[in-house]
Image 1 (cartoon, rainbow, N blue to C red):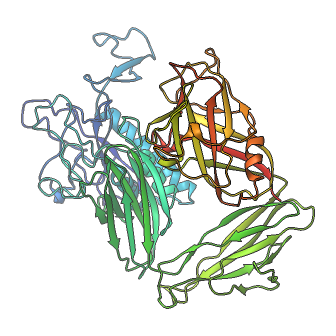
Image 2: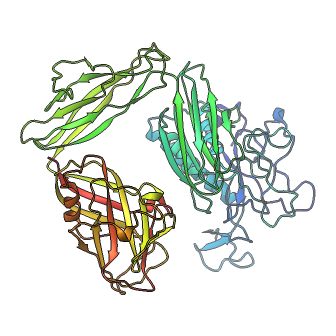
Image 3: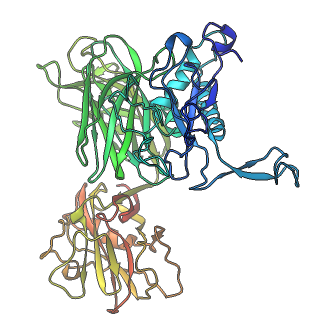
Length: 611
């Protein structure tokens, strides 16, 4: 196929080329890249080993390519190609070379390695990106190079540097860490002559096409360092002229990641163009940038892991009108629901420095009123200043879904302010509601020996057998006196402590609003407990698999006793205690605490009938 950019028939195709396998040769010519890998428009692919490092054989690019000859800085990315040091790739073979160029078994498989395998992998990645584009309604242009360049840009922009030496290396041909800096010689930012932009990440490239990040929102993602862990997060972000945006990335303790904003319009050869970035060597710190768009356009927001592992958080602020947020609310049959309308804003203009809500449409079945009881009889209905709540009341005996819409206004003028988008409130009227709460802080779970005067608050696990474990659930939004139909405690098994047998029991703390635990007071084993209790025993034969979730029998009577207390109120906190009827020394069953893994901390599930 002709790779010349002047050929219209070729320009609409994506061409993927192998970088070559000659880096280990000692002469001056063979290790360097040849045609067609040097062609500017193609995606040139080097080889990565099983541990994601650059293979010893992957050919490197020229420091001074010839643009007038259609060459470019290469390679572009690397992808799995197999390695004789870290494991070859099993592939269907050509029926010519089972043994000394003689085939013994037809249509079998062979172990092999090479950048040709890497090129096939990236061809598949490109196909996934194209499919994602088509799922979004994009039609392929067969008379233009625009979309092939866009696909190439996505794969390059979402690639990640290996951060390690080339395998079996003497140090002379190792990749260099560029982050957002220019590479050696005149290589573009983030690219070098050995691994290009780094390991291809097709998951991030597809997500960049298919998912959108909304300005002013907060998103958390998990990135890790294992060979199969997610390395890059990417989304499309819509930007508006005159609406400056500040984006930040919070790195977890001991981890570092970089933050990028790429143009969706690549260079003539399909290289990514950085609009803004923050690439500090900042373990556990914050990355941030400011960007001022001069036109309405989309961009790519990308987070690339550098080191460590954990949950990384992206948030942003943007000048402009408020952004109203869709709301989902539950309502009991024959009851009512107090609904909080929500919108985010930049605080401008000031004055007024506040937003005001308007009901745009009324529900088709139920009715709306203010918290004072005044009905909302006509729309649009501007709510009083500082009021962001309304009350929904369904028809008698009716269950189902109802909806209405609202917007917010900050008193400014477009594009820096004014009226927001229209948001939708969906109200589900049900006979019972199920809610779930999870331990959310270090001082919200603890365990103590039996009896004890002190306890642990920061251990990675909680134990039951020769300890009593306490778990505090905050913000429990159940009305005082509501009927509890059922409830359960859910815990996630820790890898240590998997086989103990004990006669367990679950209780609650008999108090109106449970306080946080402390080291020397509010010790779990000394708390006043509910009269109600539920047995939860374990025999030595019962399975307890690491990282699996286990659920207690019904503890509804325990929760019922707590919410029936005269001092219980909506949004209070309660404590559930898991202990043993008889102290057992030695082994015990252990489960994850908040400090061990917040996402595996204990959960409380309650199904209730609102008043």
